[in-house]
Image 1 (cartoon, rainbow, N blue to C red):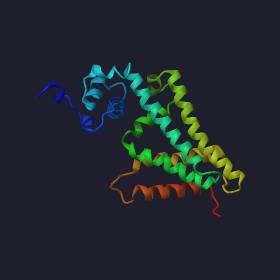
Image 2 (spheres, helix red, strand yellow):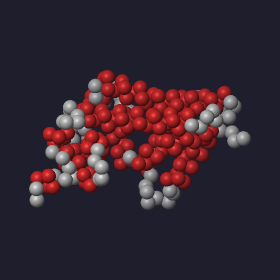
Image 3 (spheres, helix red, strand yellow):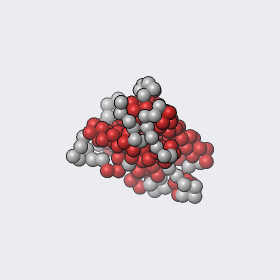
Image 4 (tube, helix red, strand yellow):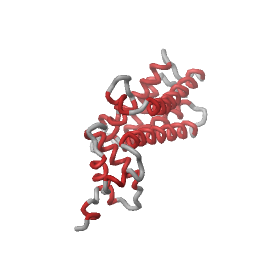
Length: 216
């Protein structure tokens, strides 16, 4: 067996390789399994099916791999949410429905690595995860997260102004909605009683109900 064949990892079985993305996908899995500090470049490379030095063709360091995983994931979610809400016009009910779907579909798809995303995106100063990233990286990630929070907050504000929604505190309601959506990754199972479409419907109903959304 040649060296190339012996190093072939599970991600190499895909058609139309995108080595950079394969590295990011593999890194997310490895960081989830053992944590950033215990993760090795060699382990990431083996999961992809390439030699460790090949990673440095795409990334300068393990830190850059982690930051890219987090930043590209967060930016992609922000873009999806913004586009989904914009497509709903000025109806806050429909905006919330599309926001829920835009969040839940990728959350369910990457549910295995959501804990890793959460541990680094929602950080507290002084924590181990906080020290892994630079202050500049954390600042960028926090900005993307605030943008997503603002999408929900703006939906609620529009709903209040139109007398369609009713909440006692906008900030609490905003993070309450996000909590309902994001926690799905921790309990959803493809073999569970409900399909993802049924879960989206139920979570949407729960979010709208929590905002006392009035149907026409």
